[in-house]
Image 1 (cartoon, rainbow, N blue to C red):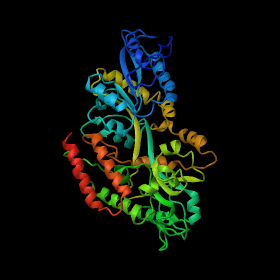
Image 2 (cartoon, one colour; image 1 turned 60 degrees about the vertical axis):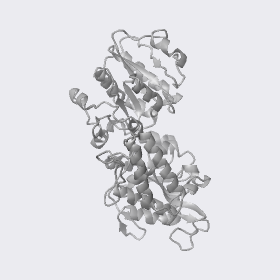
Image 3 (cartoon, rainbow, N blue to C red; image 1 turned 135 degrees about the vertical axis):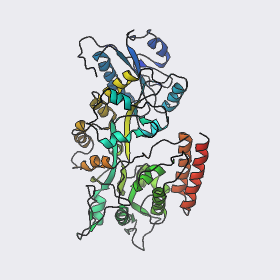
Image 4 (cartoon, rainbow, N blue to C red; image 1 turned 90 degrees about the vertical axis):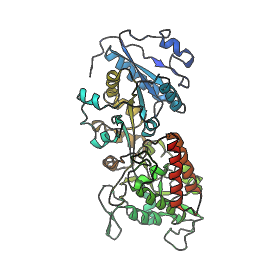
Length: 475
């Protein structure tokens, strides 16, 4: 990879505009054609290959992040004269439709990102397999956890990305509520047991966590969910909640899986059937987690359950700590995800950059991609707020997160990093035929699941499978 010093004045960064794009910089949406044709502030060097970088399928489209991205483009263009990198920033709400149109009309960008798993799953088969380019360039992968590299190895698609920013999942523990209940905290090391107040050790698994969650669930009279006098109509504090999670994200706590079998047909993995029954009973029978009405209430932060201070154990990703904890009052810490069936699965959210399969310049696009996840990775992960996937960049990340968001608290971040050895593969956000329609079907199921009591979950899941099959068949 070329690393020429800045020996000449940098070329002016060109921001390519499209309909729905964020209106920043000299090239407005109305002036896009003029800017691209040379009628704007600058023009592409005639002998340089143009590589378009599409931003909007994840972070990067909000105004505060754009200057940093423009700076990355400017510095890259100034470092060599064979590639002209062009930044294309699109409003996040419109990005999927815009990208779909560009791909369909043969005007696909070369690189898309940062993009989460769900974003790239919306366009199955659209991404270039990076394997031959990694091999041809002898690209060094030693700075990544091998599990994260494998995470982007998709069956029948290949290596569609490389690690960039990661958001591991872990348990958020409300220390104040544990102290009130007289309960020891959950373990902060994978493989360690839960130690009761009397010194008894128990496996840290779903059963142990369920017991704690029921003891942490309290009604207005102070009775917990194990007490016969407990009033489920007047709960003021819940023990456990999987925050901002659909059926796939919920069920992965019981093991990685997919709603698509090897033949492309719909299925409900057996561990996920068990998971859905556990969640449903937890909401409507044992009452240790919020159902729909409780979950949407002001008492539970209108969905931001852990932030409300009324949840003992919250399960979600690292991004929640920086985006959604501003209203939390009290002390909290991390804990390991519990095992199910002897195995731990800690679902992962991760952003990367992918090259479109239709690019006319795959080698140049690969050079840009490796720059974005390499030399520019520290600046960009700070800009987007993600944890760097590169091991060499992780040391200072949690210091910044703690200093900026949780001053005075001693948060154990080691368990967050350790959780990346237990990521879900296949991903809970993986592709499905007719992806957006399939997600709509999952949403309808999720509404009934969280809002209606006395459902037959086994029958509901079979109906869900049939509905998904119809959507898959229509793909």
